[in-house]
Image (cartoon, rainbow, N blue to C red; front, side):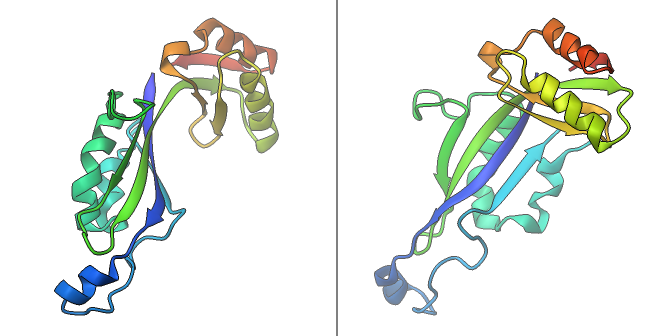
Length: 180
């Protein structure tokens, strides 16, 4: 099983009474760095390690200080906040700015990588995606034609059977050469 971490900005707040009482610029307003709906997906597989590279300039230092520990935990396959949220794959957190906090939804995404030989075009990728999507317990599929693999997203506790994934790829006319 592999893991990604999806971080989405779900809200921004502003407290003008605190800004006028405590800030050098009492008209600072909301955080200018993030917009509601902004999404960053972190991954550490196949030579990619966006935890270390995506944060450089992509996240405010104050926010990164608050959310990076949850992202790192998710990328290691850990429980982000067991017993606190209604889903241990997810955490709601905010940055340190007390006058204009940004609220983040941080989600661990569990997936299997199915390595595939024989795909050469988008039509091939579509056939593989359709075949894998039909397998029981598969939530969604992302085919990475450039990497020659498919990412099969699922619940770790209810993961699809590797044999069923291999059969689906073969039924689509391709060869599954490994699963990570």
